[in-house]
Image 1 (cartoon, rainbow, N blue to C red):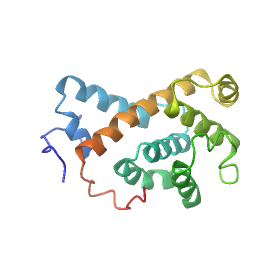
Image 2 (cartoon, rainbow, N blue to C red; image 1 turned 90 degrees about the vertical axis):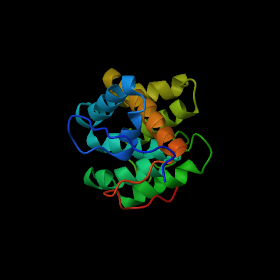
Image 3 (spheres, rainbow, N blue to C red; image 1 turned 120 degrees about the vertical axis):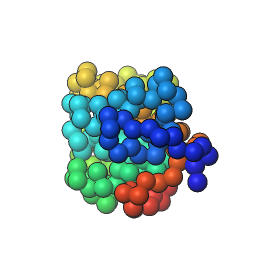
Image 4 (cartoon, rainbow, N blue to C red; image 1 turned 45 degrees about the vertical axis):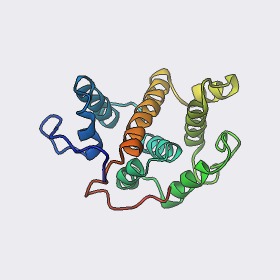
Length: 179
């Protein structure tokens, strides 16, 4: 059960997930955060598959079963396999730098490994080493790089909202995370 009651909040008169409802406790930022989340779904230049790989990886790294469960179905539609999801889950329990050190090469394309390595470095922070930066710029343009940084920041916030406030799973997210 969530630590706070769910306010009566909707964004653009659409069904609203529990995590977004809790954003309404910050009325000056709720619509802005929700708009950023919507932009991540509708307006990124990153492919749907890359966006979902990033989201799943970040939900694992941030310990958010809420986000993981919400994105399983979306990731399936984007072409992410069960083996790839299992690899993302296993990577979270390994030392930092798993993908940068060659992990995942057997199940992900090189561009996907470059993205996951970049996200590992961002999460580990605070900087990205020059060698990894060079690899990232080989596969991603300026817009995509900033979009990845934005995804990381958004999913850190929404993951912490979920873990700290113990957000209840929405009915449509039926698969349970093994985080």
